[in-house]
Amino acid sequence: MPPRRTSTRYQRPHRPLALRALNASLSIGERLLGSRGRLEVSLEESSLLEAAEQRTGLLDFGEPSFRAPLAKLLKSIESEARLHPIGRFITRERLVGTLANRMRVTEALRQEPEIRERDVSRPIVIVGLPRTGTTLLHRLLASDRRLRSLSSWEALSPARLPNDDDDVQRIRTAETSERALAFMAPDFFAVHPIDAHAPEEDVLLLDLSLRSTVAESTLRVPTFSRWLEGEDQRPAYRTLEDTLKILAHQRGRSSRWVLKTPHHLEWLDVLLEVFPDATLVWTHRDLGEVVPSFCSMLAHARGVFSDHVDPREIGRQWGLGKGVRMVENALATRQKHPERFVDVRYEDLVRDPMKVLARIGEHAGLPFTQEAQQSARDRLRAERKDRHGAHVYRMADFGLEKGELDRAYAAYRELTPPSAR
Image (cartoon, rainbow, N blue to C red):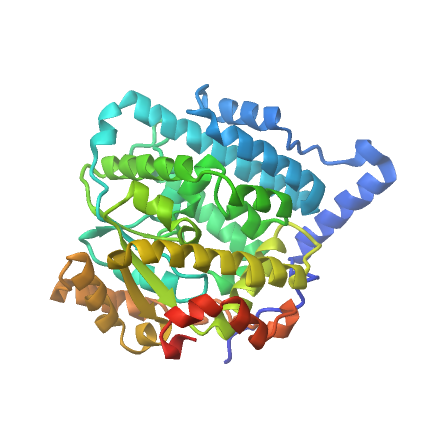
């Protein structure tokens, strides 16, 4: 039986009947009764901060660099995101959760200052554009017991909770989030499956400083996106470093990290300032596949929060804007530090993953042992393509043409191997 295919009707995102009915009733109530019929979900900064304080019982948010991006983001959400009622509720919960996690990280460092002495040097960091095989490669590398990856449940709750020494509550929360997303947005789940126990992107740790691509990937916030491009990313990467040390401390040992998020591609100069001995694994794939695929992923993600998704706007913003900026910034850093990079073609990863892993290990000074190879083979068997549905996308849906992409990404195409173009 063929797998279920994802929808390409991005302007009318798939939504379970129960959620659609709830959204409709809330919207109708607001139209008929005005403010009396509105679901009161405040996105005021003071309300979010107060909620985070109540949730944690703490008062210290750490150094204040997060406040400017938070204020900019909230203004952009209110004026541009066009959230439906449930999307607004989820957005508030996500922001309160992010602020609460920031407070818990700050408290962990205050209580145990020796955490800062943990070694998080020589990470292996996967930095390719979305949809270039980064998730598969991440999970294969993370299967090596000598490497430490960020689990999804850790990304959602990086600091330990009170009276949760066995992390039961943190894991249970992540499992609930996984089931909720699979129910609310099965199409997105088919594009980018979430597993509470699998390796997750460290962009969620960067988001503790409210300076990540999380918001602009899931919400229409163009004003915030433009503002963020000119902001200093050092606070986010310093917080990432501290949080990795906290997570290493929780397991009682330091290990080499294997990290992954396309966010890094835009900010490799800052990443190497904080992690100067990192091995950067840059994944490549045919742009005609990559760009419409990640535009489709973003359209499905935005459909979780809003009934107003414009695929052509996403094509312009990300396909011809953000994506180009990411690779051009990365190329500039690569010219200064070519020795830090390993290139991986998607075709090679699919055809002979063991050879790719061995080459990465050689560059990173981590020999590809028989045990590591067996662990990777076991992981590979679990990574069955289309197990949650087949991802369907078309370049034309996003107002894109192959020739236009070739011109926009000309500098990048000169770098990539012929079969990855």
